[in-house]
Length: 318
Image (tube, rainbow, N blue to C red; front, top):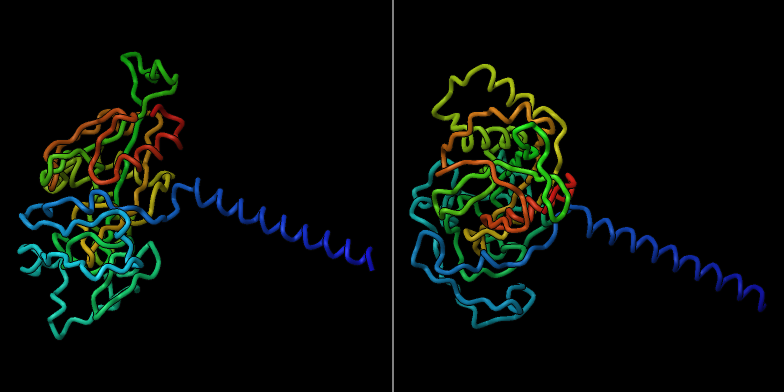
């Protein structure tokens, strides 16, 4: 009887250790996998007044962001920008439109209404921000009820000296990476060139289109030189590095509409594709330039966190 008990105990202990090992491995992967989706926190999404308006957000303290916290006093302002209410092709109709019946948490025709963060709740036909309260209801500057999907191409190269050698940072001893940054016209902040995924469009197509429109001004230069077209084709057809897929802490977010993105890094290791690429601001960009990557990067929304992941994965200075 005692021997049987010892065997059972040993088996039980082994099972516990195995389960613990599996948990720790899963936890390690969840923590260190940069491509995972994770529940972000609201910081810029609480910016007041709401961008491009005088609408003040209802103040939301950190402990009351989550919908799981009861807050009967919560009375957020309602705001949907006039440009959205004008119902351009990229915007949904108002929910009061009887003919509009969105299929949330799913591919709704060609419009992707599923979230990278999982299933979000819907109250009275109105989707709820999966991260929590923002102090504003409605759609703000965003066109879609629920998730608004974007794509951010992070284009990088090594910084090189006049002799063509990689420049290293004297403190870290690591090579310095550069990325193409644009200055947004709407707020003046520097950012990764990117934009919204069109209905039915592949993300890979969005990544290429947005880079060409915002950093190469392809809308004005449709007849690009053949050499440039060949370089762009080579850049975007090579192996790429998935950086992030999930919710974005964006100042345009509301309780009912929010930004999600896929950030992907395309790297020119030799510099042959990008060194002579004619950067020219276009579309929503005020300026465009190569920017050295380091810990002092101050960028729009949470773009700096994407850049940090790229630097770490490429073994570059940060």
